[in-house]
Image (tube, rainbow, N blue to C red):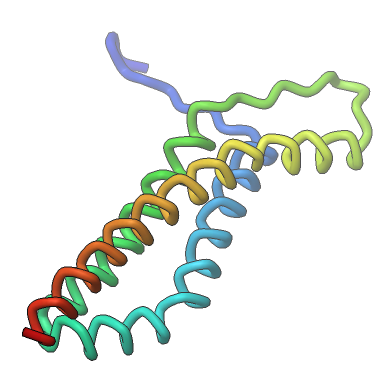
Length: 124
């Protein structure tokens, strides 16, 4: 090993936590994508803007969930049983859920303001 080289040691539980955070982010995105795309197509009427807002949502959700989970470290004893490790990972997902909730809340407020402003302009 060279001087100044960084060694990353990630436990399987931490990898499971990261994978679960990414999977949850993608699942939530897939659940809202179709209706959000239709809403943006109706209100904004610019295909590039719709793609931008959808991609921004996905990137923000992924980064928020990863930021909430990567900062956590999970340490297990040598004699810990498998289910204890599973519950520790599940408990650690709490921060990812909070990050996704805050991101979605801010995004919904932003899109609501956008819809209200553009609807008012179209009605006049």
